Every structure is written in C-alpha cells, then in structure tokens.
Image 1 (cartoon, rainbow, N blue to C red):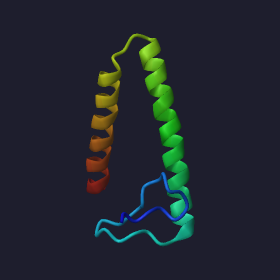
Image 2: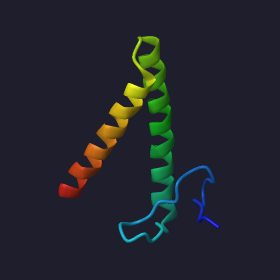
Image 3: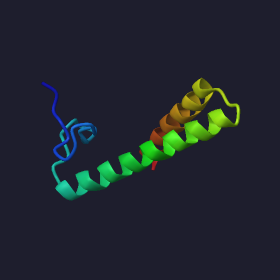
Image 4: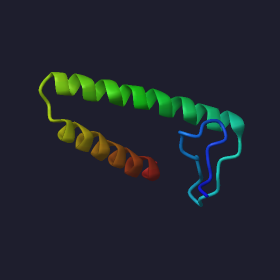
Length: 77
C-alpha cells in the first residue's frame, strides 16, 4: 500500500532526498498549501492559453520543462 500524505489523501507524500517522509506537520501544511496554489495557477495558465489559441500540449510541455529546469537550478544553489 502506498504511503499517504497525513493531511490530504489527494496530495503527495513529501519526502527528503533520501526518501524519508517529512514528519513535521507545519512543513507538510506549507507544502500542501503551495501545491494547491500551484495547481490552481496551472489550471488558470492552461485555461487562458487555450482560450488565446495556444496548444494545450505545448503549454503542458513548457511548464514541465520550466519545472525540470527549476529543480536543476535549485540543486546547484
């Protein structure tokens, strides 16, 4: 059985680089809030882009590339 986020079954289980789950409830709350905000922003981004004539596939790819780039940049800092 998969381990679940203790504060929301539909949210990821936040873990460290070593794979250990984050145990601090306050940290989990912050990550959950950020995740939900990011989901809403992404939905708005897709909706606006499609209404303006952009390809949904292209929009999704651009966000994916941005996220991967941000993760790489964050690891260097």
